[in-house]
Image (cartoon, rainbow, N blue to C red; front, side):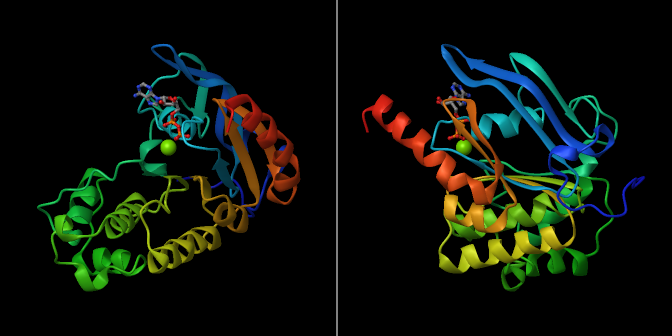
Length: 253
Ligand code: ADP
Ligand code: MG
């Protein structure tokens, strides 16, 4: 993999085209009568950590699914590493995804789930590597237990280990804190911290605003499928307070 930049770090508005890991332009997605996304623009530079915020139903998962080519946008264009995500050569290998649903194999053990994923990525991983990957999410002690015996939080952590097994440059996480207890949240925080240290580009969709703001440099907030805020996390709370009030009035809540 050719690395063009020595110093990743937050790229912000000065991101040039070669450093643009995610480039979504005027992306809209319609499901029957629902517009899940409305003309969403999102550019993410190499090494940026972006939290994708918004209440349930605001379009976060849909945006991640469009970015990972699980679903096609109704309108608009998406490029990942400068290529169409569906057809781009080598895009899949550079992308790690924690989908909304974990899609684990319940009858397989934790290690076997990872081995299966490694095979899919064309990796040759020995058991020690897989157990090491589990240790990063606090699951090494249950390496040989079947995934179906895991709590939903443990499944989430196993899915997280699987998402990053192939050392991807861009990691997209959909609700990494969902279904986690306090201990699980600690593991995920540390895990995300490790990805950050490794200068990965990260997009984290979550409705856990406090955690996201503590972890990320930049917040992008969706309401009703539209981007209502895109800027430094330090500016987020003040900016969004007004918008939330307006939405509250509109929704009667
Ligand atoms: P979030 O992840 O922010 O909770 P989603 O992207 O899941 O939001 O949903 C955005 C909107 O799109 C919601 O109104 C939701 O009901 C709708 N939606 C999402 N997926 C589908 C689908 N497969 N079919 C129909 N409507 C969908
Ligand atoms: Mg969602």
